Image (cartoon, rainbow, N blue to C red; front, side, top):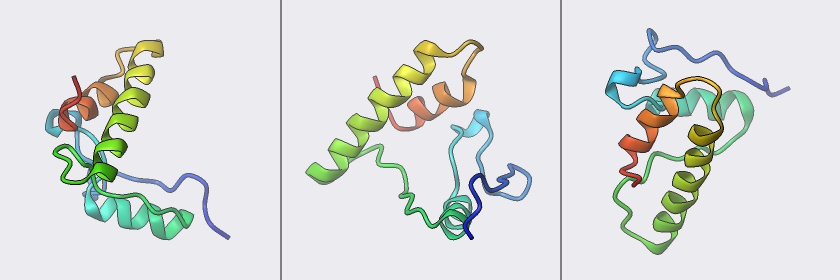
Length: 87
């Protein structure tokens, strides 16, 4: 049975620290996909296709809402917005 929230760690190289833009590494995406049956894709900061551009716009809008509604500093969300080149 797939696990709902796999344990991902910066120390094991599965997540990037906030100072490096936050987000999951390829290793972290592979682990998450394997354990949950998901299909997470790599970031699309510079989209080459219309489909990637739509993914980027969707991510930027969704994450901007996370930052806006956060009760704390939302540093990981802000770092991911910078990494995806969201404006």
